[in-house]
Image 1 (cartoon, rainbow, N blue to C red):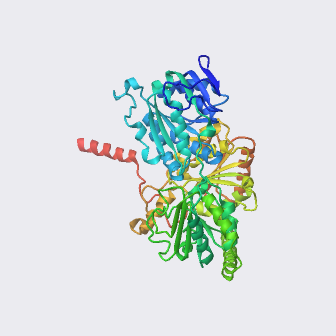
Image 2: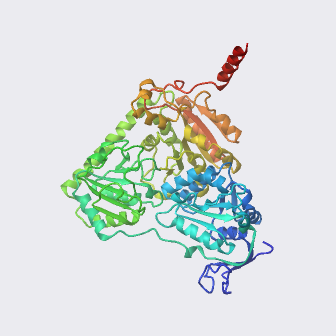
Image 3: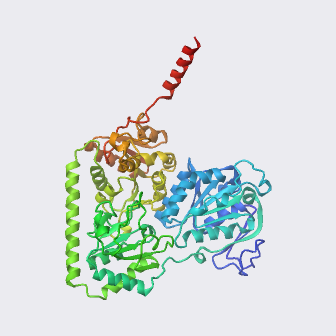
Length: 623
């Protein structure tokens, strides 16, 4: 920073050449930079706003930014990844765990394209992440130069909150401020900003960085009183009410209010399909994933309240799930989801925590000792006890199964993990079993409970790198990551970053040697695939993927377990490794489910044998 003047809380009038700020003096907590390069402006902005990490894979268009990082390593660390998908998912995990908005720095259209899948995942779950990409220099635009993309800033437009192409270095700080602000503002999600190469390198006479605390938008939008009244009246009068808790609970912790509502009126709570465990799994009101553990619950409901959830993002159209005669209430801040698919009796664009608190307050002013409510509370207690008995009986039956049953695996994992552990789940066809047997204890305060993270996007490869971000964003507790073998292969390169940065993450791979979710959807077709057990494109055998060798190749200790009696010891070794500050991987051979499957029944052929046959035919024909 030899050539850069850095003035905190400067009293001098801010007269930057960009003219992108209206005040005569920078506000208290602001910063004026003079004679800084565009790269230095980005770095100083991140430091001033308390962003400690940049995630990415460096490229040639961003050399001015990388140069600015060199003398700022103490305040701003660069997290190197082997693939941009890994960088994006890692930043996503960090955002979920820390509540902060990170920055991902990509290289041109190549990096943006590689990261795009995980940008979709962040958008689907409304996770705030700022994504930047380097662009061709302004004096070389239009030449169709190396990796030039004329519409780069618009490339991910449908899956971002805001996109922008910075053309003047004087506007860099203002553009970054907007990117963070709009990523965080409801409903939230990634923003995408492109920078021409020369803008990182050019010096700016003077630029202003506004303070972080003057650049926030509150999410605590209150619901209309009539919406609260409608929900309260519906819950009090219903015979079979049901609450669906959805993706917005990833950002707004609402379990305390919702448990109190459930206790007061005897209403079961289900969570949206394919998302993190955002509700205590041992609370008597928890009834699992919607449509999975008890498919009839939503179909029988006469009052249905979707709280921050969609209705319903499933792999296929299952018709009308909530009966047309039911009263339906929908609350959330995602305007693209509220009342989208079902007729509603009351819908509101409001914060789910604010709404749940208002509903709870109104309920406490009502008579909660009516015969109907007492009967509902008794029914819910019996329902929860019966559900728990069924799960325990199934676990006991499957305890000695080999390959290892999921109920055994998650039972052992539940005993191995600390009560406040971070848990990252990307186990597409096992998530319902995970929520059945993993404990999030409602008796503990939120800060001392386990925190479980997942994605509803269906974009594979999120889990392994997201776990590193989670360990960065919520350091201290253990971090465990459970991933299917198919998902793990999409981002196996993340193990290198875990080893490089000594990320204390215990990886548990659920290995059934197939893309099981795809096969289960194929089986529902009830055609020749289901009749023969031959499913194109789902087998991960021949050769079997050796996750232990892969992990060791990236610098991570690992072992494979197929005997259920050796599982506890393997998880104990993983626990010891992360306690010592290093990652560890356990590859677990688990039972497949969803019908019979012949892994060699389709698609097992030899290119070399085919080539040899052609050569032989050619020689025979030439004689």
